[in-house]
Image 1 (cartoon, rainbow, N blue to C red):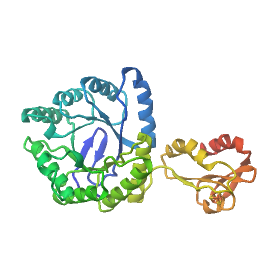
Image 2 (cartoon, rainbow, N blue to C red; image 1 turned 135 degrees about the vertical axis):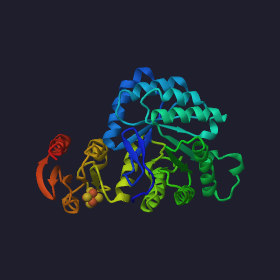
Image 3 (cartoon, helix red, strand yellow; image 1 turned 45 degrees about the horizontal axis):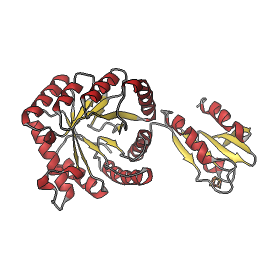
Image 4 (cartoon, rainbow, N blue to C red; image 1 turned 90 degrees about the vertical axis):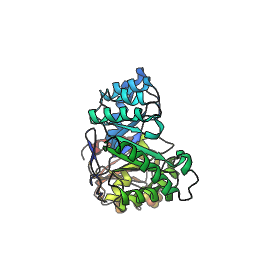
Length: 348
Ligand code: SF4
């Protein structure tokens, strides 16, 4: 999976140069002054689940101010997503913002980009150029090779910053189609050593979006392409982070957090494994070491199939058993399962 791109520093996170790709997500609501405490708590939850970089839309100065306030309160690298108004990008860089996402082409006159690049260079803030297939320049819209058109659009943006002597750049080229996304990133990586933020944009609701993203991003990462990634879902930031982390774990062959082995459940199940897994999901994934946790419906396949699990729970008639490495550790009534499982989990 090792990439040979140059390294760009996003806050405390190194992107490129073969570093493990940090998983990104995006905050899905406007910030409000009276909810920054709750957002701060949620940022911590996302960090616990494996989020390395978090992006916020900053469509106006109020959002820039609120993002700036939040950036002073959390250690997570925060990214300002700016379109059209260069003054918002300038204002964001008065705060400890880790990166600006901007398309040079939509800022207007060249002097505006020059001001943004000058301040970014002065503050040591990298810029992500984000090109989406849905918003290509008019002369590229009818190009039959969509992947190539995306690359040409990205190269224009890179050239605009390069002409200003600004090279602290990450590039993303996204489409909602898997083939276009993969082709664009492969083409670009053959020609440039800039780190790539990879993702399938507007990938869809949870299941479709995860499948599309996994197919595209695994293919790229397996080729050594991709230095940071986002799984874009019509779903929660938490699910985007979990999906992205799983893709990185599979592509790298190295897991940094807990793995859940859970059975699909059938008529033999002694307790509701689906609800149990959902209740414990975030707590388990927040274990930042490569342990395996099993949730199995019955003893027919439970402890046997999950014998390598560090800890597991299985239905057993009218009881529930907690097991470790296939050996029964405790037995309890289903209504006590959460309490007993929690006690055992905290001993991991
Ligand atoms: S572990 Fe038991 S409940 Fe779960 S799918 Fe297998 S047989 Fe069914």
